[in-house]
Image (spheres, rainbow, N blue to C red):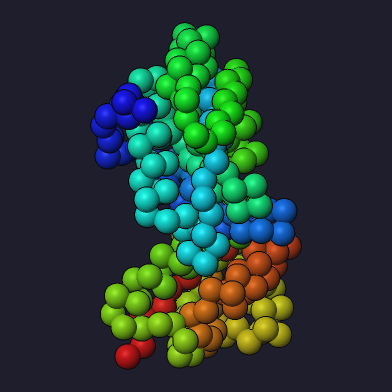
Length: 269
């Protein structure tokens, strides 16, 4: 493993038109936890013919399910070293990874230039020769990012879970554990005022309170304005509870052709 000689802080090599933005979320796979990290900004680069091939590497890791990361710091360092080495020697863009508790594996996904596809598997096979970990590799032509969309890109609920977790981490830096009920504001966008108010009327059954509605400029390329609706609900900032709330609001927004944008709350001392 002497080839593992350096780290690349960004986790990928080469300039990109769109800066990476990694979102981390958890889900259940095979009745066991899985932790996914995805560069959601890569979606804006698709289709990508400059880096048209998807390289996916899967290897064994030692799982510790009691940890929020599923793996220890030493295992995480090893995975980072593998990731950096691949980026350094093959180029392309690192778009995400998954730690899968049910199979005790981690997979890493990159998009690389087509000219590197033929040599990458051979080179990586030599890198991992003699490794005590089982390693599998696959390279497929995938300029549309189908592998990325299938295995990494989060759905709307997973995006909300990731955002909520970031907010809770921020609250905790100020000594707020999120367990005290507090006003939480929710923001939505609708194509008409009538749709927004019908949405609000139905949401009152779940305890949401009207705060404001205002007109927004039309989105780029469109003529009609949008309507930004703000609702409020007093609840603890509990991630499991918020997951149920978010799921309800995503589905209800879709019913009225709206968009559930975000939520916010203040620190409770």
